[in-house]
Amino acid sequence: MGEGRKDKNKMKILLLGSGGREHAFAWKLTQSPLCEKLFIAPGNAGTLQHGENVAIGVNDFDAIEKFVLENEIDLVVVGPEDPLVNGIYDYFLSKAELKNIPVIGPSKTGAQLEGSKAFAKQFMVRHHIPTAAYGEFTIENLEDGFDFIDEQTPPIVLKADGLAAGKGVLIIEEHGEAKENLREMIEQNKFGKASAKVVIEEFLKGIEFSVFVLTDGVDYKILPNAKDYKRIGEGDTGLNTGGMGCISPVPFVDAALMRKVEERVVIPTIEGLKKDNIVYRGFIYIGFMNVDGEPHVIEYNCRMGDPETEIVLPRIKNDLVELLVAVGNGTLAKENIEIDERACATVIVASGGYPRDYEKGKEITGIASVGSSSEQGNTIVFHAGTKRDGDKVLTNGGRVLAVTSYGKDIHEAVATSNAAIEKINFEGKYYRKDIGYEFR
Ligand code: AMP
Ligand code: GLY
Image (cartoon, rainbow, N blue to C red; front, side, top):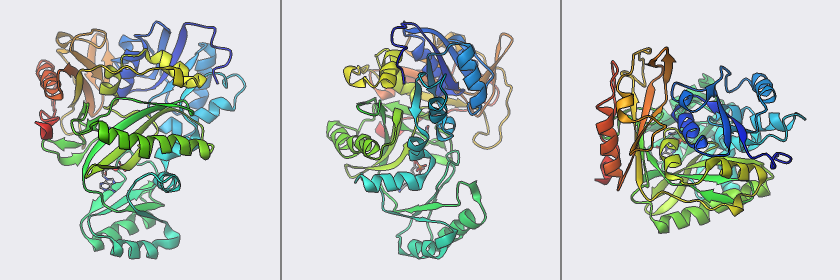
């Protein structure tokens, strides 16, 4: 891909998605002199500050094809996992008129690293990448699954094989309850088709962190690391969410740990993709458990994280369009990643009730007093679940805003975001004030 487009300097870019991640991408892509025009499908009230929102769903490949051809799009950047797992990369490759337009993201098979936990585990075992010991079970060997559970020391980790919107992982203290849940997952479709197959894993005790890799399938660049806070309540209590905030860099992730990450995981992953003939040109998000200084892979995602993108991209000084063009052309080796020395934190402002039921359509005030995403102060307000209504901005989701700040360290960055959030209001506003708490 990419051939024949290299002589054109200015690019029209289509970005797929509508969350805080996509606002951060829009903010960063449009800083590039190479970006002539950005379209976001479907976007939110924040992406509107940087381009034109188009009412097309991320999985509507026919509508995306028509739009790309009519608007002479030169580059497609995919935010969420769904279109990747559904094969948008292969769809473009299969069409004569689309195949020269780079799609940033893996092939359908590559996206299985996120789309199937069993696929990811088999890949890691095949390429000797450190991860928890596991077994995989379906209706065919359910009884073996019960025996496997009996052999585990609790807590027992059950994972639906397929995509389950971040809800498909259960961590259970007791053998009987684990068996009951295994039965419900496999026999009663507890997570729909996603749990027809279940991966059961050894429990790893440690602290999590995330590493992001950009690859053109030949070379790779390691991007700033991050740690996210998934629970709704302070002190990591309560229900799991899509993420309530995150920090970068992660204090305990030192050069020695990163060397292990690179040698034992990143290089074998890139080499493994090559050996298996899996086409992968995009971002890889690797979730780790640090077990006494030894990094183990918990999961792969075939995309950037949300809210991780809202701190990773602000810490990258490079022209992002230039990097993504290099990914499309297979020339990433020539690029040097430059990282901002400052720390970054983002704090999610959520609708009251999230991740359970919450109301939408509340007017948001005060964003302008903090600084919009087009300004370059210490704080950037990225929109997640928002929509524009005339000159008002309304809440339109559980996670409403991601307020990112720079600081000399993560604590200063968090304090700056928290102070900014005090100036922003909507009915039911909720945020965690303790992001980064365990490193104080
Ligand atoms: P995943 O969707 O695979 O990232 O799992 C969701 C969360 O479950 C992770 O972020 C971890 O907090 C936890 N988890 C997953 N696998 C394990 C494991 N093998 N040991 C301990 N915790 C785990
Ligand atoms: N913040 C977690 C994710 O994007 O998967």
